[in-house]
Amino acid sequence: MKSLLNRRSVLAGPSHLVQIAREHAAGPVSPDESEEAALAAAGVTPAAAPAEPAAPSAEPARPVTTLRPVPVVPSPVSARGVQMADTAEIEWLAEEEALTPFRVFRSFAYSVSLLFHAKELAYYVALYQDGSLWRALKAADLEAAETAFHHFEEQATRLSEGETRRAQLEAQNEQLARMIARSESQAERLRTDLQRRGAQEQAVSNRQHQVRKDVSQLEAQRVAAQAHLNKAHRQIHQLNLTSNEGIPHLPNR
Image (cartoon, rainbow, N blue to C red; front, top):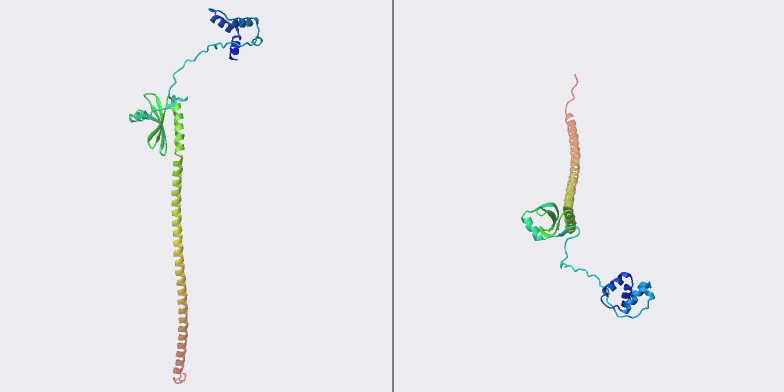
């Protein structure tokens, strides 16, 4: 089948015939090749020619692509012009005060800085964790650097979501604790006030009861004294009458 395909490829057009004739011009032409050339010249299609077994012939030469050296580690440069940066280099540039901060974002223990190296016209985007450099990217233009900065900013925000929630819950719990303390203090004051009010009401009630008792006793004493006084007045009146009986009857002038 392979030989038949090769034969059909040879019969496909005059260009192949010219190539064969050019390649075999210096040597004798085989009967098969003469027959194929005659059929092609007569306009006979390949299907009309009888399929005869033939010896395998060499395939047409194909161009070989030149091999290029492939790096062992793929280049980290992305399509947006951002590549991984050397953290040691950034730390050294920071110590030399060769970096100018353009953007700074901080969320709890995570911070992102967009740094500009004026001498090399390069931009660095660094992600820090607890003040230690964690990851860094390098960009050749400000637009790509800002894109990387926003990417690190979102990453820092996601990483600090737990700490954000923890801070919120701690603040809410402290607020609830203060509200509970104020409520308990207010309840204690109200309880004390009620107890004091109850004690005062009891004291007032006892005092009123004692006053009524005293008034009742005094009223009884007054009644007794008034009765005694009336009795004394009656005795005095009786004694006066008795005393007046001894007065002689004197005529009127």
